[in-house]
Amino acid sequence: MLAGFIVSLLSSSPVLADDIWVDVDTTEHVLLVMRGNTVQDTFDNIAIGRFGTTYFKMRNDDKTPLGRFRIGWVNNASRYYRFFGLDYPNHETAKRALDENRITVETWQSILQAIKMEKTPPQDTPLGGYIGIHGIGRGEREIHDQYNWTNGCIALTNEQIDRLSRWIKPGTMVKIR
Image 1 (cartoon, rainbow, N blue to C red):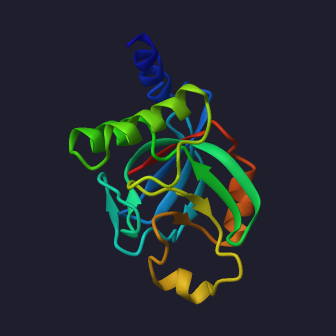
Image 2: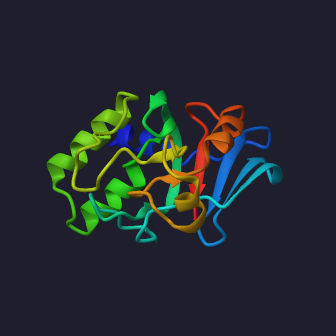
C-alpha cells in the first residue's frame, strides 16, 4: 500500500519552476518546450495518431494517449531518426484501464512492478506501447505536413527533433492534451 502511494506521488510529481517540460497541444498541432509557465521553444505542424487522441488508448488503435508522461528512454538509431520513448503505460493510464476492465490484475501488477523498479513499463500489454516523440526518418515530408500519420506517437520533422533533443532528456515531463 505504501509503495503504491509513493509510486503515485512520483508519477504525478509537479513540475518545478526551473524544470523544462513539454506541452503537446494535439488540437493546434503544436509542441511547446516550457520552463515553468514560459515558452522556451515552439514546434509547429506536429503529427499525431492517425485516428486522433484518447484517454483510453488500446494496442493498435492508432490513437495518441492523452495525459502526463515522462521521457523514459532515447533511441538515437530509430527508424524514425530519433525516438524519445514515453513511460506509457504509466500508473494513471494503467489504473484507469484496470478500473474499466481493459486490463487484468496481472497486467496491472506487471506495470506497477516495472514502475516500482524504475524500469520501462511492459510495452506489449493490451494498452499498447512504444509511444513517444520522434522524427520522420526517411519518410516523406509532404505526408507529415498534410496528415496525422503515426500509430499513436507524436512526430516532428528530423530537423525539429534535432532542435528538441537539446531540451529534453529521460525524466522530462510531457503533457499531451
